[in-house]
Length: 223
Image 1 (cartoon, helix red, strand yellow):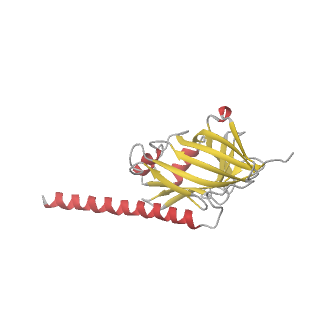
Image 2 (cartoon, rainbow, N blue to C red):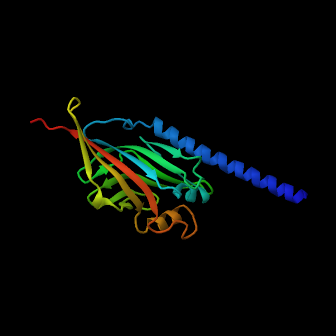
């Protein structure tokens, strides 16, 4: 009985320590997001854009089950939908200010981070670029290479329709693409698992990541 009591207490202490570590990681993520000196999250100016990205139900709990916390940093904010990231339907929402480029929309100064709380290994998707025409999101993963690579695939890119609204008083045109569905690009799941120190196959190849809405702001051309 004494051995069972000790085992139970030890498990309880380990669970409590792990919960505190995850909570601390999320707190650090939110502090980093709100204190970084990048674009203000609610800014709407010509040449700037905004992405609202939401992970699919079940992804965050899958990652959390392996001790992995998902968040964003640098000019962005993240929040958890549902009771917790451990719940089956828990979702992480990213609010990311971005800057338009000639080839797409770049998350300048914003990173998507996977952090393994069990071994302190981290994988960063740095400055992702959304290319709606190519139907993919590329980013640099510093832990793997200095070159940008496809990290997410927009599975319904061909079906996305632009919705344009004009604010003539502000001289601002908003072009919005809603409901882009995202999945891990081929090979990225295995790379993430390896870099995070997870067992092979922990993340299925091409796994559904979530969805995103992209708003691009521009000037209204004067006639």
